[in-house]
Image 1 (tube, rainbow, N blue to C red):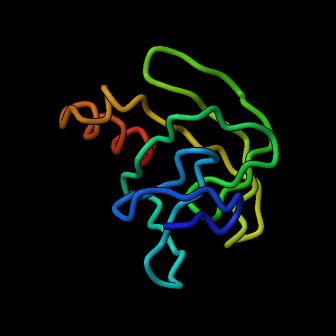
Image 2 (image 1 turned 135 degrees about the vertical axis):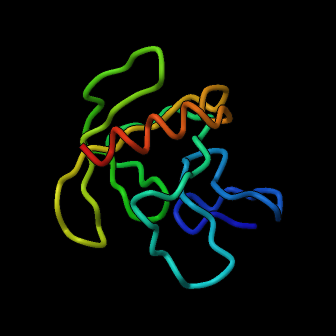
Image 3 (image 1 turned 180 degrees about the vertical axis):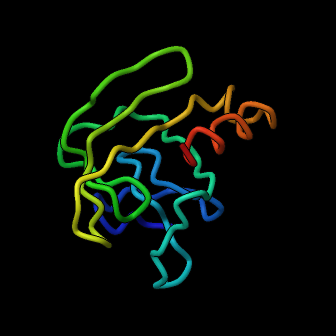
Length: 106
């Protein structure tokens, strides 16, 4: 599956471009629920990179044991928001995801 942003050729079952992190969609739909769990890209996200087809990276705000937080522009709602990406090894733990979801509600 070819990335619409960087044109990298990814395996057909890829959810995200392994080169730039752009979400690879089988259809034209690009809406993502704010509580949906997305696959964390393996590449570093840098200024100007688009993640999940809608979040343009402005800057990294911080990082810690769970992952990284970025200031991004949400292209769908045209606002700057914070985007927290959890490390893949942590994101596979159900209790951690539950704790993270509760954190979103506060």
